Amino acid sequence: MADQKTPNIAVIGGGPGGYAAAFLAADLGMTVTLIDMELNPGGVCLYRGCIPSKALLHVAKLIEEAKHSTNWGVTYDAPKIDLERLRTFKEGVVKKLTGGLGQLSKQRKVTYIQGKATLVDSCTVKVEKTAGGEETLHFDKLILATGSRPAVIPAFNIGSPRVMDSTGALNLEDIPKRLLVVGGGYIGLELGSVYAAIGSKVSVVEMTAGLLPGADRDLVAPLHKRLTGIFEAIMLNTTVISIADTGSAVKVKFKTQDGKEEEQTYDRVLVSVGRKPNSQIPGLDKTRVKVNQKGFLQVNPSLMTDDPFIYAIGDVVGEPMLAHKASHEGLVAVESIAGHKVAFEPQAIPAVVFTDPEIAWAGLTETQAQNEGREVTVTKFPWAASGRAVTIDRTEGLTKLIIDPQTERVLGVGICGPGAGEMIAEGVVAIEMGALAGDIKLSIHPHPTLSETIMEAAEVFYGQSTHIYRPKRK
Image (cartoon, rainbow, N blue to C red; front, side):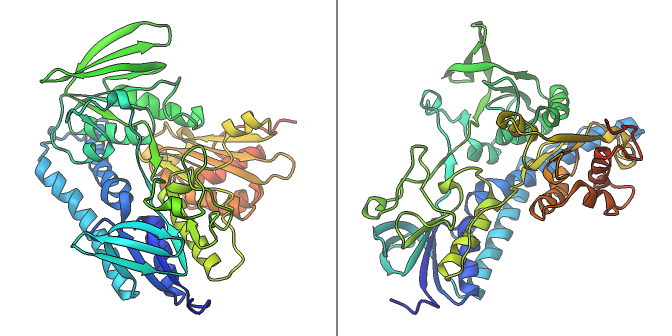
């Protein structure tokens, strides 16, 4: 065994969790090997997820703002979409970031191996290298960061190139005249927004009663209203009962909650119904790692599995499947391996939907509070009363705080509007620091900004908001 102060570790999976863990381990003096199938670290997030989708969403936002500018007396010609250049831009972003991670690996002296890993036992990994040959590694500790993949509905897996998952949609092979998005979650709405902006007539079908199931309805409402004007159709309480490729299009049959059936034809279908953990790791059965009923690897608060030599982080250990959650779990796992007393026990993991408007929340949601029967006070500041929102002609937004009425502690924050994803970090800090509504109220925010709506939402709690009249109830 290596010196316990500088253990030899291996990390399988080079996504945001895996490379964050590998880099910290190297910074702490450990000998680190990082194994992944890609040329450089980055994982699904950088290669086929968060980063390329945000690059395309930026373009979509630019197109929509150009259309919106007619309200202010500024008119542009209809955009001409050069798909090849758009793909080149997206791929350039991916190459720059993943290449940068490759350089950081070398600077930290992390041994990076491109290939497929198989567990031989709790302390040994065999790697089938992409470049050819095999290598067997022995280590003191292992971190599994194998991530997740798009969920597949067998009935929709008809072997047609016209039926895409999120990875296929990001390839931008063409601009379909009519696109159906199956699933009203954040991935489907983000990619649907991109295709709508570049010229597709987009329809969304969702089996539940609302878009973004799980998010507070008042935050979703402004987005739903805006998408109603952008998408061709939003079908709620509706399921897809069959998909068939006719050779020139895709024929889709729907069934509504009341039993009514309808048939429509689309050029392409994007199936976006969630993700599944990559927990079927070759050789896992030769260890003591356990997999729960939902397919996630079982871990304790320090991210150690039932096998004391093996840790697991990220999408493969449970919801929420978010890059920043995986990164922080990776840091906790490494700290634990280093012998520090640590646990992954966040009070708030921010979630962001990068549509237009954006939706972001952290901590306790109003929906959760209602389901748990918790007594909370919900204060809201409408962006119609925000000077900054008025100047950018985006007054549909909303900022809300979930507050403990007894202690006045901020338990949750929710925001809908442009830039919500940037603003939610303040809410995360407030929740983690145990801030009171009064702390936010007394913290001077710059004017005129959208961020001051957080301060004014705290003022609403005391019935003292400057820009809206909401007397405190006695």
